[in-house]
Image (cartoon, rainbow, N blue to C red; front, side):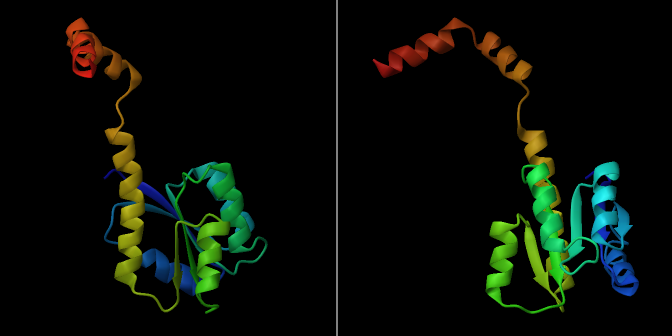
Length: 158
């Protein structure tokens, strides 16, 4: 996996640094932001591959920021929300369904599950890009198959 950029957003410097340290042994470029406005600006300028953010942020609430970025990227940028406030399953469902979050964790959370979720989200993105054939490749394959490929389809449907 090539070096991916992860933007981590948290208003509490201690929590921000702790979250960033979870990725020390991985080949990620870590970007940091302390509030929602700074996070939005870094998202625009740095083009991260994933955003990991605290729900409660100054200057731009995490849910609202998630919705804005999710709308702008048509859901193609994974956004994982972390929160220290327990509000029950309806809050998680709202984050995922209404605001476009890719995953949602409440503190304290299992660090291994968070890392696994992030790896899966980043892997899915890579797999999709690598697996889709380019239009010129499809045309080349069809030319190589020749007219007998299309006539054999006709014979089978008869």
